[in-house]
Length: 344
Image 1 (spheres, rainbow, N blue to C red):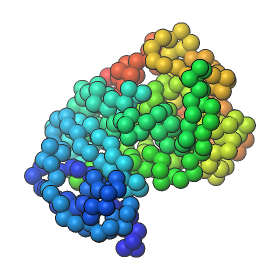
Image 2 (cartoon, rainbow, N blue to C red; image 1 turned 90 degrees about the horizontal axis):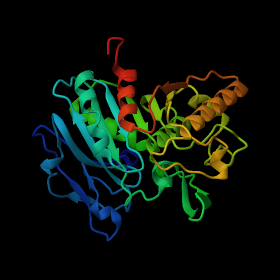
Image 3 (cartoon, rainbow, N blue to C red; image 1 turned 30 degrees about the horizontal axis):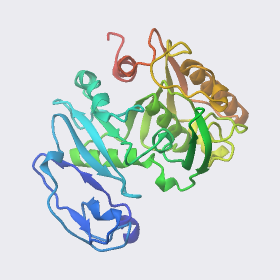
Image 4 (cartoon, helix red, strand yellow; image 1 turned 180 degrees about the vertical axis):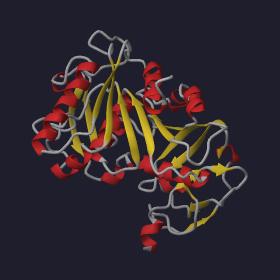
């Protein structure tokens, strides 16, 4: 049990009010874990060196009312992300928590900013992790959550020439969200047990894959908005476009179809939409030539697969009228969908 506990240690460079905690670092070993900090003594889960007391955490990482950010390193491989947050002044222990996932621009701060007004109105804590290009290069490390590796992209056409399927689930991004949520919940002494999620474009891609490949997480309602393309519930299509050769099983999908995934689409994010980069290749054009068509295709194939398994599909398809590839407008619709009322 002690060994398991040590391997779950991670840093959340996060301080509530003036309650500072001690910072522990790996005994220098010239490895990447030399830069990681931990909140308790023990053994480094990466190199097995003894952790020693370091300096106190930077008070700039204090979480307080308003906008801010903190650094987070996961417990599996120590990779770090910056988490941009907004904490309403009226937040209470029962307030909902929302993850906002950025698009291909890897810009968590601006995405967080578009939710400030909604956060104040509905009293929601917003967490917007930023997966930077330097630590998570390529769409396969963000959109695909690290489920493939050794990717070679054909520059003459939009598509993947070769790749390897990464079966090491501990290297996937999906577990980050529960870890961040648990740390923030403990630090702020929140009572909520689940969190909601909204992701646009590339953010929508990672979220629909979260629902499929990590069912049972603490995510409640998952709004995957305006994804460019999908991993479709289709056993004949090769992963990552479908499920062939993937780690998915019928048991996993039966559980996944019970998730509260909302395929959130803009009515005008169709084949005529010019905003955003849309992948075009033989593999993805099977899904459609615009994001609206591809989202509908994904949902239809999920319904067919669920019917074949004789299980109910709890996923929903929601089309937002008069909106194209616009994360602000889709965010406005998402806020109302998640937390609004008929009077909004």
